[in-house]
Image (cartoon, rainbow, N blue to C red; front, side):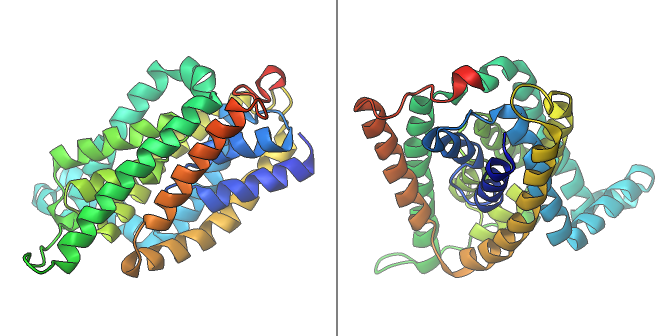
Amino acid sequence: MSWFESFVLGLVQGLTEFLPISSSAHLRLTAAFAGWHDPGAAFTAITQIGTEAAVLIYFRKDIARIVSAWFRSLTDSSMRSDHDAQMGWLVIIGSLPIGILGLAFKDQIEGPFRDLRLIATTLIVLGVVLGVADRLAARDETGGKHRAIKERKSLKELGVKDGLIFGFCQAMALVPGVSRSGATISGGLLMGYTREAAARYSFLLAIPAVLASGVFELKDAGEGHVSWGPTIFATVIAFVVGYAVIAWFMKFITTKSFMPFVIYRVLLGILLFVLIGAGVLSPHAGESAG
C-alpha cells in the first residue's frame, strides 16, 4: 500500500465511520473503484481505532462520568441506581453480541462477507430500514392532522432489554455495508428513542467493540500488502477527520432527518449491482492480491 492510498483510505474512514453509510463498505469500494488491493478487515479494524479515539475525546466528559460512576458502584451499593453507573453496565452488556459473533464469524468477515454483491444488498436493505425508522421518528415528533406529538425515549429510559437489542443491531455491522451507526440508530429509532439518544448510545457502544477489534487485529497489520507505516498514517488521518464529522453529525441530527443518507445508500447499492451486472466491476475486485 502506498502512502497516497493510505491517505485516501484514512480520509474515507474518518468521513464515513460515524455516518450511517458503512465505513467498511466504503473502504472496500474505494479500493475496488481505484483498482487497488482490498485493504482487508485488519486494516479497517485498526484505522477504526483512530475514529474511536475521536469519540473518546468528543464524549470525554460523558465517558469520564460513566466510568467513574461504574467503578464506584462496584463497592458502593447506593451507586447502583445511578444512571451513569447503569450506563456503564449497559455498554458492557450491549457489547457482548458483537464480541461473540465477531469471533464466531471471523473467517466469513474476512472473506465471503466482503463480496461486493453482498455489500450492495446490505446498503439497500439497511437504507430502507433506516428510512422507515426515520419516518416513524419524524411522525412521532411532528404529529399530524389526526395524531398528537408522541414523546420519544431518552437514554435515561434505557434498560437491559433495549441495551441488548442495540447490541445485536451493532453486531449486524460485522457485514460490510450494514453500518455500525446505521444499524444501531435504526434499532434505537424503531424502539422509540430520539435521534440524539440513539446516536449517542451508538457512539458509546462502539468504543469497547471497536477498540477490542483493532487491538485483536494488530498482529495482522504488517501482513500482505499493508505495512505498519501506511496503516498508522491512515489511522491518524481517520482520527482528525472523524472528530470533525462527529461534531457536525451531532448537530445535524437535532434538526435534520436521515433521508439524505437513505437515498445515498440505496442509489449506491443500485449502482453497484448495475456495474457488477454489466461486467464493469468484479464482485471480488482486489481480493486476489489483497
